[in-house]
Length: 126
Length: 135
Image (cartoon, rainbow over all chains, first blue to last red):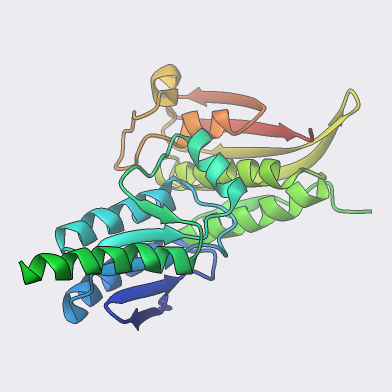
């Protein structure tokens, strides 16, 4: 079965979704990410969906689930690169992805995770 | 001359849901829909294809570029021979689900379409037709 690759980027994980995901692929990504967060002690997860032409309620729920599980495992999830037409459609569909942090692109998403890491380090020094 | 009508596409697995999305995209482009309108009808088609699979026990879809009273749009019709919906009004409500989903499929698909028709009879199946017009 094919898998979506997960790259390690410092203390974060980067997932670039480049294919139209069928449901099993989405479910596999959820499981793979969870085990990699633990294996690498990752503090952040960046999911780049700029290649996705649509996000339906199934994929929306997957993003929400990933964010909720990562939070429990002490990692922040940032979804980046959502196309404007996808954002408009998601809201009309009734999904606001309220549990998910978003950023316009990978750089800004990375900066968001970096900022949290710095706060984390500062807390450590206290 | 672009294709204005597709053959019946069977919906039997989650791979078929992906196929429905791809075909909806091709047809939405053929109908001349804007990018936002394309995205809306493809998303609605994805929701309904998954409903057909999960609740209707599989079925089929047909797509057609329609022209009516000077308007052009894309019409997508889903049909299954599943158990049917006991209470359509209840099923349309956001958050209602008889399965494990979010309950956004029917209501969401309706909001993403300009026209939405549903016929369902207990024991004989469900037919849903959505249309998005070029703006």
